[in-house]
Image (tube, rainbow, N blue to C red; front, side, top):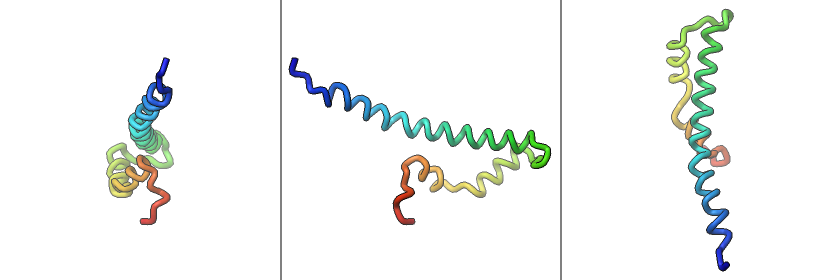
Length: 78
């Protein structure tokens, strides 16, 4: 059995994690945003609407922030 274990066992796992990890990070970012919006709506001390929360979120969060979370570019100088 002259099967290379690197190509048969390791490579599919590396490909799977390189595809699945960015998708999971995007899902976690979206869940965090929606959860923050729900807390802002249901907390009486904050008392803002869901639409105004996401309007303010769009003003504060840039695409660079999301890509920094996806690709882990935090070690690069800006």
